Image (cartoon, rainbow, N blue to C red; front, side):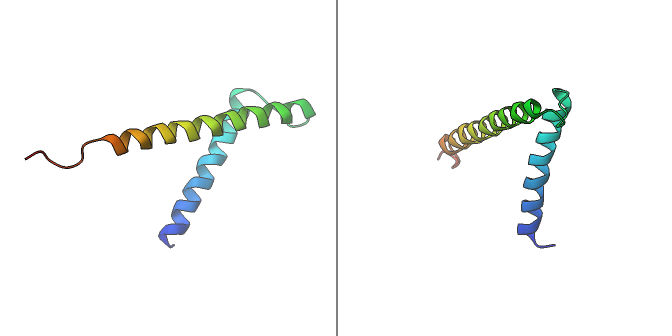
Length: 70
């Protein structure tokens, strides 16, 4: 399996597990329409949090001193 495919598969599994955790933690069933709306709000909030944390972490990594001092 090519490395790009492995990364893509990891990302897909990550997002699916996030969705499953939201469903199980909030005891949601998709029989009721309001639960679908609640799930979409919760999932979008989770995606926003993942994005902001990745953005913050990348900014902090860039600011680190990577070269040794002479």
